[in-house]
Amino acid sequence: MLLGDLIAELRLDHQMNQKDLAKVLNVSVATISHYESEKNYPDVSTLSRIADFFGVSTDYLLGRTRIRMDFNNFHREVRLLDGSMTSADCVMARFLKLSDKSQADILNLMDLFQMRDDMRHNEIIKPLNLGE
Image 1 (cartoon, rainbow, N blue to C red):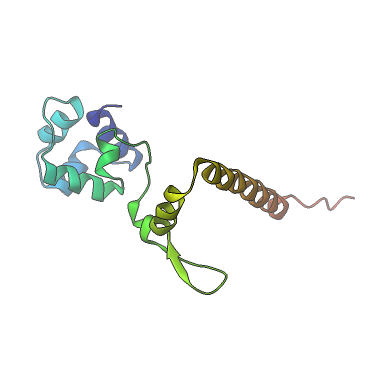
Image 2 (spheres, rainbow, N blue to C red):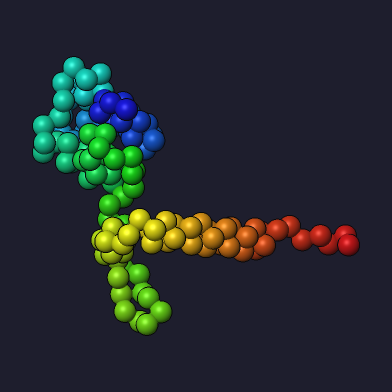
């Protein structure tokens, strides 16, 4: 996907029009229109402000990754069973040091945990059969 398309998609996902985004970025509506039609491109500073505003990375905007998430989540602290704390960026750094086999095993475990969580969630919201 092209930069202009991504900016437009993020803007629409946030239920903003071009005027709203122009105001946030302190640029003209024509500038936003030119970004989205790729007649012009934002400078590095503006690209960073766009990424920060929408909670994505500049790599996402430039098409270098498909991860579309708020990068503040990578710094969110998680308490482990032993009481220590870690963050998603630390977990990712450790994950990337593992062998391909170990990474695959972890991803398979994550799938199992997701299925377990989904089953628990479905049990919680299962409608009551009061007529039985």
